[in-house]
Structures are given as C-alpha cells and as structure tokens.
Length: 279
Image (cartoon, rainbow, N blue to C red; front, side, top):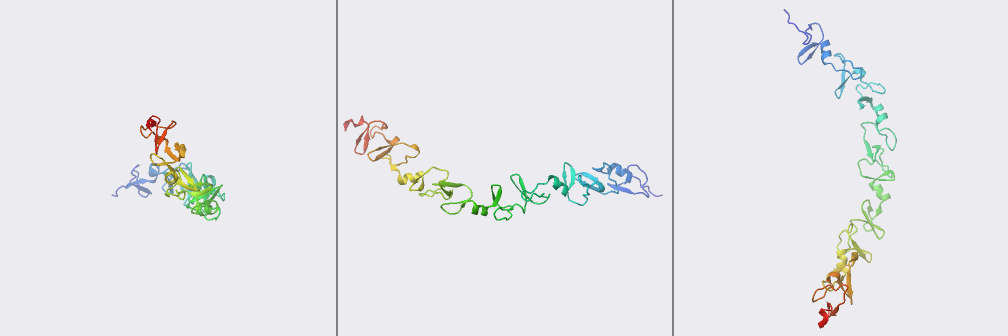
C-alpha cells in the first residue's frame, strides 16, 4: 500500500499536484498562498507561488505592479528612489525632488556627487574657482561676492600683502600705521614677542611691548629705580629732572606720602616739612 503524502494544513492528498515545502512540511498551493504569501503593496492581492515577489524594506509587489508612482514605467531591475513611501524612477525623482545645480541649473541626479555651501548645491564639475575655472573639489576655498575662489587665486587677486614678509594675508591680519601685517610678523622690536592681542607702544615708528619700551626708554624712579612707564594714565611726580612713582614719593624719614603736599630736599632725599625742621 502506497504511503499518503498530504497537505500539512488541509490534509488533502498532494499526489499529482503542485505543492510547496516550508520548514520541511508540504503544502498545497492554495493553503500555502493563503497562509504565507505576501500581499502586494499596489493591488493588495496575494503574490502567488507562480509570481515573482519583488521586495523592498519589508514591502512586496507583483512584478507587474512594481512601477514608478508618477510615470508608471516598470522599475524591475532598474534603479529607483522613494518619497513618502512611493516608488519613483530616477528621472521622476530628480525632476521633483533633487537639487538643482547653482551653476548650470540642471538637476543633480541621485547618487551623483554634489558639492554644497550655504544652502546651494553644485555638480562636482560645476563647483569651480571663478578665476582659474578649475574644479575646487574638497580643497579649501574662499567665497567673495557670490563667487568662490581657490586659495591661491584668492590670494593673487584680493589678499593684502604683509608689509614685513610680503606674503598674502588670508586671515587674522593686523593693521599698524595703516599697513597690514600677519599676526606672526607683528613683533616687538626688542624681545621679538608677538604683539597682537596685547598693549604696546612705539618709538621712531618701531613697535615695542610695554616691558621692552619701559626698560629701554622710560625714566627710572628716583626711589625704587624701576621704570616709570607713564602709559595707561599712570601718574608720577617730576622735580628737578628726577621722577618718582606716585607710591614712591614719600618722606625719606617717616615714609609719609608727599603727593600733593609741600616737601623739602636734602641732597638726594625728600622730606616732609616736619622731618625737615632740623635741616
């Protein structure tokens, strides 16, 4: 007696009939399709065993239903894009949603390389230097008046030249006596430290940091012998070609401040009137 070979679900005999194996269990075509077939996204009908099941992100279509939402052309074995879960051929998607090149005004096709800057897009070959017309690509560039320039062209055409090294200044320059300097070139004449960002002064058109200027040119306090800068509104006392810091202008004997008061001198010393009685 021949062993029976039945559908795993409806138990009808499968001899002489088409069937489908799933997890080693046989199913008649009708049961398999009702139990396991995917539903087509387009027509909402089951995708039968005899049909090609096309899938994308857990969604399924009959081969005849897999077409562009707008132009209805078949997308089988063709590139496509999606928008709001709708399938679109590359051409329709580009016309509707792709960026337009800021230079040539043509569509930038999906998948092609594009350059973006301040909300505008370019084909890679259209994103060129205004001066030399060479593609900028991923190199550094400088925008000016709605045009883009590669760094060498910008420096040749627009950048000021440092009065010291004669090279272009592209960023962070300093102006001194109406002349442009690189920050790295604007140095103290004395110690060669960078002056950008700190207080400085000048003598005979040469720039000095405050320390160097005071050490080289400032008068020395007759009391403490350190320089009196006189810069920034600092006050000092001058008498008979001698100078004192305000804080140093004190009686030699009792150390009381003599600023704004009468005083007496004894050789190189200054005295308050009380201490000078015995002179």
